[in-house]
Length: 455
Ligand SMILES: [Mg+2]
Image 1 (cartoon, protein in one colour):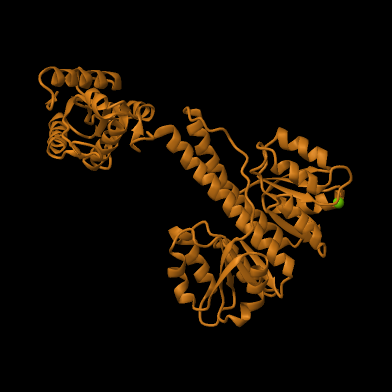
Image 2 (tube, rainbow, N blue to C red):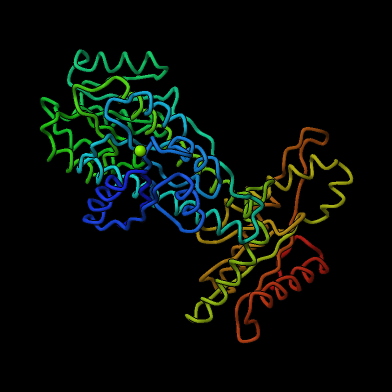
């Protein structure tokens, strides 16, 4: 996986060094020698990662980071601050400015490539989520791209170690800083511990487990559905270069060398939690956007716009592949008089109940939509007229057989529905014609007595 990287440093030699190392790993590097140049480039080109020196004349790295992270056009680009080895306050300040990761000078080759790779992978996922969000926005959703505000405070962490003692000081440090930490000393139980989704926000694994292969455990955590996106931080020793590389290839997000610096631990835990929260929020906003754009709020069924887009696709596909496609339009008989007699609350209740009933009585690949008011449309792919009539008749019988409870007299209301059915044929060759034909059939069912189907 390649990436476009913006390297920002006021010292030319530093830029050249990073450029040489990253280019050797096939990353595409663009240099910038001050903060303003970096900000200008960011608006002209697209980048996957920014490596940012802290100390620069003019606009310093922290300010560049703050501006990147508060601009909706650049917020999604991961920022790695490059700091002096012993400068803890820079790292804390960097995190507060919204940085995603840290590298210390002189930059270690392993640390550089692994952190850049990890962030590239994460960005690819976020880009896909942003793309889906844009697709639904372009299709007419009302959501605009929003700035996402998350922090890495008060996380819930699982630490895996052979003994509580070995991890005692780590646990205490994290607890002292507001995190909640559970320690698991039996790796066998870890997977069951983690199978509940959304419990933990980061897991810390000690590479040196006595009776268990820590890398195997990391790989299991990575492949499990519930923990696929859970950040994993490995605790390793200085001489563990090889297993660290393997771990990072397996999808471990980060590592800390033992004995570790107190602040390094806090900063890494915090930034991993923050990144997870960013992705989670992005994901839930995408889901929300799609739900908002394509689902009917009252019934949870698809809305008319989605059905119409989908009907067009289904019709085209069915004609091209010589497949069947049927459509049912149904509405509730005398719905207006129900509304007039019992009020809109009862009317809404009936629409919700009927929506549930429709959904329960179709197959998973059928698509049910609330077309508007008390009218519903069901698309039945791969289905001929005979089966569609059977589905419609069964639905009619079920509705007629089960009255709906309401919380006012007479407490139950008997309902009936009428249904019109159409199918693709030599006369009916488009989505519009399918709709028109079914609508005419529905009208016929209504006119000839209601509580019946017509094709
Ligand atoms: Mg500098």
